[in-house]
Amino acid sequence: PMMEKVEGRNQTIITEFILLGFGEGPELQPLLFFVFFVIYFVTLTGNLFIIALVVADQHLHTPMYFFLWNLAFLETSYTCTILPRLLASLLTGDRAISVKGCLVQFYFFGILATIEIIILTAMSYDRYLAIYHPLRYTALMNVRVCSQLVAGSWMVSIVTCTIVDSFMFQLTFCNSREIDHFFCDFTSMLPLSCSDTQTVQLLALIAAVIWTVVPFLLTLASYVCIISAILKIPSNGRQKAFSTCSSHLMVVTLHYGISFAVYVVPIVSAPKVSQKVFSVFCTVLTPMINPIIYCLRNKEVNESLRKAVCKLVAVRHR
Image 1: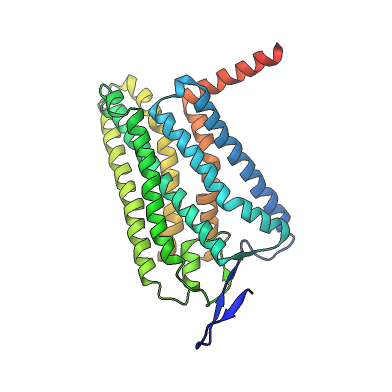
Image 2: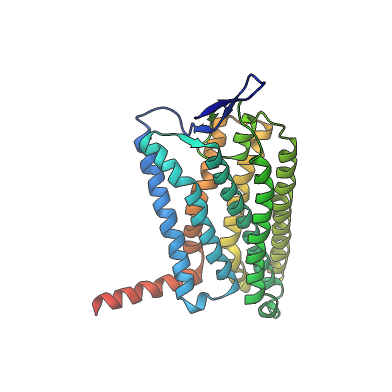
């Protein structure tokens, strides 16, 4: 049963949500399906291509590309938590999702989003060491340190999201079945609960401060040090030094800029439609754009790509 009466109360517990997505217009659904399918395909292709390139090319077996490999894997997983469900609902018209299914989607989305922020922060620290301490770089940022940073990011993300989600699973939902979003987002789900949500809101706020504000400040501090170090380099060497971190800087700026638009702007004032559009940028377009940025802006990735293409051409000619 989709709904059941709560004893002693004139409320109905909801066991299924309806994700409203992008509106009712049936003529718009095939177009939206095509657009999101193309985005999904390009995202998977781009990120899996980055993973294959980093694994196959010995020249890319460095800390920076180890983090990039992990970022590409995260963004592949990140996209797979949201887009298949959205594509299925656009194709079939079935927008229903169980409350447990919604909470599970939110759980995995939370874990992957948290790890991504920590990995981006680790990448900015890696660029800081490469430019600010070039002689000690290989000693400070080796395979063991990189592995510990990645493993640590997975551990703290899983622990944090498990704590928050364990409280979310205890909530009952009875205010409405409709979620005005295209995926199960925390800010969209919470108003539908008829339980006391103060504890889970406090936990989510603490987690957001620790795993969003702190990484942002650390990334900002890293880039202040990086830019000050680059400015001390003679003008003929500045371009080379900046090119090693320009692609990461673009990705970080894009990530935090859109995250700010999604989660901070609505607190001030923003219509629901614009919030959904920003969410599409944050959760769907960013994982597609990031591999493109790294391929276009990074000389080593370009060189590796050129070699891979040459090898393929040579094999075909044989």
